[in-house]
Image (tube, rainbow, N blue to C red):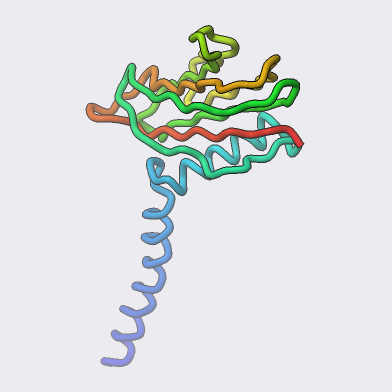
Length: 152
């Protein structure tokens, strides 16, 4: 009898453990989950002709907040930026590219938890990419991720 109970408890624990671990890793606000979402969005929107040379930037922002990230870009090269926000609390994230004078050059302000902007600069320089949490149902903040890509 003791062996049967011990076996049953062990089998139940082994069955539940992988689900618990998987749930913890795939929390929609974890850096791992946001990175996977960035990759999925990029593959869907950009195909395989773009690569991400560096790890994405992961952060948090409340509704109406966001961050800027500077990128040194070369003229005539094709770039793409992918922004995502953690679900289910995130409703809408926006993305824009600005020149050194603050002029908006490209943007995705669609009503979505994913934003993609393709951009080809005319001149060499530093361009600011803004990610803004347009709508977030969390009272504190929602998770954001930004990936920068260049065409192969």
